[in-house]
Image 1 (cartoon, rainbow, N blue to C red):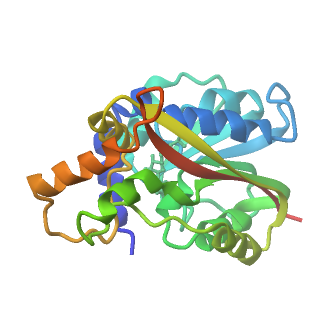
Image 2 (cartoon, rainbow, N blue to C red):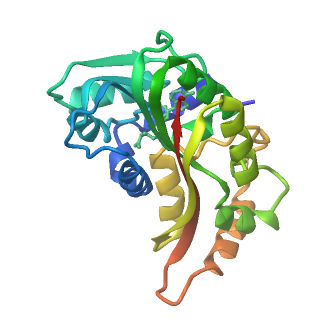
Length: 261
Ligand SMILES: C[S@@+](CC[C@H](N)C(=O)[O-])C[C@H]1O[C@@H](n2cnc3c(N)ncnc32)[C@H](O)[C@@H]1O
């Protein structure tokens, strides 16, 4: 079970350093927004929700295509950071809330966008059913999430060190498709692709995870990692150094556009 308080705390702690490490998030949101059916310069949506808005990087773009915005995040620290750093030209409401129990009325929103936030929910179908409840008929849900196969370099490097869980479990493509089906929303787009990031040291790899709050591992065995285990992990990771002299870290991303018929 995901500890929501721990997730919120972890992201609140990462709020000030988040943007400088969120390279994958920006790559992902650029791809995600290409799937919006209307040009971002048309104010095609009355009410748009950014679900798991984090530091608010998507808000200026969403403000261009919407008449009002609702920024929702589980982490109060992230939400406060987003509010302090974005001066938006349309009415914007800031809600400290959970994607699994949206503090929004039914049939009230036209578009919900969520970039790399829903992998923090135990059961993807739950937030999708919530979004479906809140969407007006014809409304759209556009989201990206991580798929099993993400961070495999970490899993591989830890595998011979000890049997503890060091990497979060991500849903398989099949499990994601099953959640989409359960939501009752119609699937307009489902696309999966791999993004590999490169780092010069294992320290940088770990730092990138910490900066974006992704260092929090659910169900982690509480036994602390010893120095020797850490050394063995680093030595294993070093064997993955490629021709360019860099260490890879791969993310498998799913992009989905859903519609409430
Ligand atoms: C990796 S960040 C992505 C932030 C932002 N969407 C972006 O593209 O930069 C994930 C965000 O989801 C939020 N989050 C995690 N679980 C959530 C939940 N159940 N409900 C709402 N927000 C959640 C976290 O607090 C965090 O700010």
